[in-house]
Image (cartoon, rainbow, N blue to C red; front, top):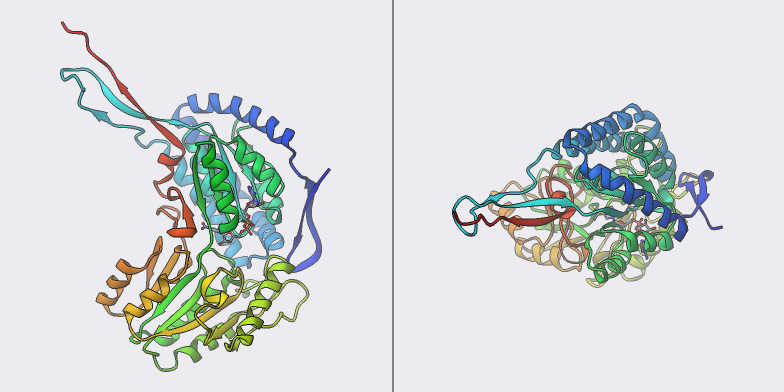
Length: 460
Ligand code: NAD
């Protein structure tokens, strides 16, 4: 029997959970139960589905302290952000609890004229297969499961192994408000993920670009609706007219908050016209961020998820130096036990360096320069990703040029690349995304299929 284990990144000897990995027969059993539960659930009144989701929101809210503590312990998210994630999870459940009342179709002119009835209506797809990463261990499973359930589907979640305990506890709380079998968590890694993807009538994935490409190809071969949200290589453009200290603080937090482990974290800072003292201010703001115990409310950085993640960041910093880059700060492990890395800023990299091209998921960020806003936009777009981008300027024309020119799904003006509002559509361009957007009003279309009903009225 294979076992999934997760350990605490700040204290790797702390075993958070050890559970059996879901086998193919576990997945089959979960699918049978989910199918049965889904038929009744889809036929329930919107008021019943709404009430169940509101009750789930209440159950999660009542467990705020416990859930936040588990998020801190299992994935090393700093306490303030962990509390924010629980609050956001509650808001997501409440938001989709209301969307069950949205219109599910439209009335059209009868095709034969007269008083015949022609209309469209949406129906649940069936079983939603949801594959999730570890970095938002409550919010991401919920921003998929809440709309899937709201629109009448069952949800099978395959969480990242590193966030197994969070997913199981979340499912207990939410599942206690739903019919048996409608929501299930299937622990494991790639094998369990493949089995869940193979069972879904609709597939939603969030994770790395490499795994997302595999999931997209497996799911679309089966012809089921599929969406994949993947990595980013997010730029922040800094114009010469900015408030230097405030912009530096915002960018430092966007790059290094939660140790840079957000798909929207700033990975490249592109400075235009070198505002006086900006690089120094960015270094100072970075060094002010507290690295250490994520359970301390004053901590903003915390550890990375595991040893491999820490090694990848340290190797990228060493390779930056070896290829002529300048280490502005960081590049070394933190002082504590656990997978800590000092927030690392590098400058002067050759254009083809890994840090200017690929996502290194941790607290490392590259600084570069551009001669004009047009050059900055070109550099910002010169990667295979396109998730989030920001521009800092007080000039409206520059802001609008960037909003038009940046190849990213999320464009922020005078705001960090990080930060996602659950009521707005979220997703990226190019290798950052496949399929439809998530969140906001977008999921109704994804988690339902559209049927057109035409009635012919017999001639009188
Ligand atoms: P990952 O790709 O390693 O794993 C994601 C999920 O896929 C996990 O549950 C994993 O067990 C599962 N999996 C692995 N192989 C699979 C396979 N062959 N078939 C099906 N499932 C499989 O990603 P991660 O390390 O958990 O998360 C970090 C990544 O997620 C980063 O690249 C980050 O940018 C990205 N991310 C993106 C968003 C977004 O919305 N765009 C949000 C958060 C994280």
